[in-house]
Length: 468
Image (cartoon, rainbow, N blue to C red; front, side, top):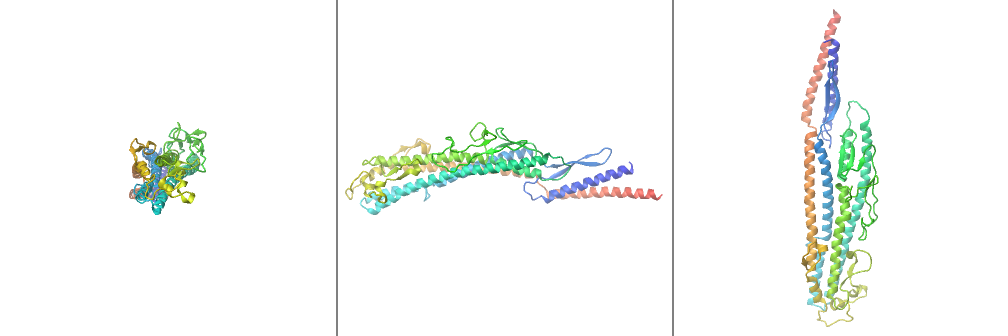
C-alpha cells in the first residue's frame, strides 16, 4: 500500500468519524423532542480503499406508523361522538338531576297531586302553573342545546377544513423541498412531514404513499387524491344557523368536496373516520335523532293533557303557532295562565270552563293524573315497543341517552388506549437512547483517534524518508 493510499484511507475514516459524531450529537440534542426519530450514518467501502457516507437513515417503524395514522383517525372520531353524546345526555339530564326533564315532570306530577288534595287552594294552583311552565322551559332549553350542538359541529367542520387545506399546502412545500437534490446532510423535513400527516390523519381517514423525508402522496380512504404533484382544495360552506327544520338532506347544510368529488360521510366516496366524520355525524345524525326524541315527548305530553280535558279540544299543554320544533313550541295553555289573560281555575276545571266549579271539586285533575299514568307506546322516543306512563317514557329516553353516552365513552377510551400503545411501540423502535448514543460516541472517538494516529505515523515515516 502506498503512502497516498494510506493517507486517503485514514482521511476518509476521519471524515466518516466526524460525520458520525455530528449525527450522534444531533440525536442526543433532540432526545427530548417529541416525534424525533434517531438518525444513523449509512456507509460503504470505496475501491481501491477507504470509506464514504452514502446517506443518513432515520430509524424505521413503517408498519406501526401506518397503524398510528388509522388509530388517530378512529380515536378522533370516537372521541367526537362520545363528547357529543355525553353533551346530549347532560342536556337531557339524568333521572336524579335537578335541571333535567325527568325531575321537571316529577315536580309537575307532585304539584298536581298537591292540587288534588287542596283543589280550592290558590297557592296549589299557582304551584301547578309554575311546575307546568318549568316543564315547557326545560323542553325548550334541551332543544336549544341540541341545536347549538349541531351548529357547533358545523363550525368545527369549517375549522377542520381550513386547517386541513393549510396542512396540505404546507406538506406540498415540504415535498418540493424533499425533491431537491442534496448531499449527505441533516434536516428536519421528515419530522415536519410526519407531524402534518398525523394531524391530517386525525381529521379524516387517509392512505399515505412514500416515506418521510421524501415526497409523500395522500389520498382519502376511498382513494380521492388530496396531495400529489400539488395539493387539492377541500371545500365546505359553514351554515349560519341550525334549527329543527334545517337538514343536510334538504340542502340546508353543506357537504364536503375535494376537487369536485363529493366526499361527505355516507356517500360512495365519503370519508369514514377522523374528527370530520364525527362532526358530520353529530350535525346530521346524533343531534337530529336526539331532537326528534325530545319532540316526540313534547307531542305526547300535549296529547295526554288534551285527552284528559273534556271541556276543550286542547289541554293544559299545547303546541304554539310556528314552524319550530315541538320542544320549542310546547307551552302552557294561555287560558290557564293569568299572565296571558287566562284564569287559574281552568287548571282545575278545564280549559273550556267559563266559571269556577265547587271549591272541593276535582274538575279534570283526576283525569289529567290518570292520562299521565296511562301506559302508552312511544317508539320514536324510547326506541322500544314498551307501553309506559309518561314519566317512565321520559326515564326510558334518559336511560337510552345515558347508555349511548356510556358505550361511546368506552369505545373512545379503547381507541385512545390503542393509540397510546402504538405511540409507545414507535417510540421504542425509533426514539433516541442517550446511553447507547454515548457508547457509540466513544467508539467514534476511538475510530477518530486511530485514523489520526495512522496519519501521524505516515507523516513520521515520510519525514524520515526526507531526512535520508
